[in-house]
Image 1 (cartoon, rainbow, N blue to C red):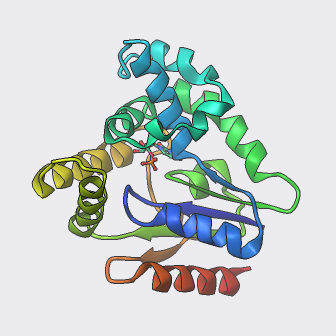
Image 2 (image 1 turned 120 degrees about the horizontal axis):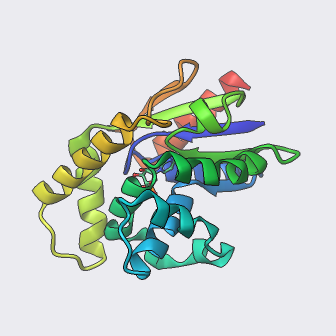
Amino acid sequence: MIIAVDGPAASGKGTIARALARHYGLPHLDTGLLYRAVAATVLREGLDPAVEADAVAACGFPDALLDDPSLRTDEVGKAASVVSAHPLVRAALLQRQRRFAQQPGGAVLDGRDIGTVIAPDAQVKLFVKATPTIRAQRRHLELRKQGANVSLDKVLADIRARDERDSQRSTAPMRQAEDAAVLDTSFLSIDAAIQRAVALVEERS
Ligand code: C5P
């Protein structure tokens, strides 16, 4: 069984994908980390994420980089959204994601284009969403816990800019697959969202 979980930043898709993987005993790939690893490599080398050739050269990053906590910062997330718009970067990371999806026994992948491009034949597709304001509040709380001193308005502006870039790019834009079930987590607790996700998987598998 392949479970594709897509949606915007801070929608809850990562938490839901991890919980589904645990529930069904499936391996899980957070595909955002691949774009974050490319972005972190570009930034570390002092190169420009907007230059396609520089971003493509960074696609050979070592696997161990995926475990690096520095990939989770907002700065890297923003640069990931820039490198991920380059068609050649998406092409370079495609096979790796498809191989992961097609391993025997199945897998859970979360990202922006899993149900539309990486695994269009996935048995279960979820599109997880929440209002921009609620996603900004969640991200703001997270950043505050990490000790960052950033305003809610700035976080909301960043979320809107990232949504815009991810959904307007020409290659594999973020969009809901036609056969995806929508899960709006705006007014759900984490536990309730996970329960709803399991119920949707049960209905569809
Ligand atoms: O999900 P996360 O915030 O870690 O993703 C970082 C960025 O990587 C996203 O803003 C998006 O631009 C890009 N991404 C993508 N396709 C995916 C996963 C992430 O374009 N499947």
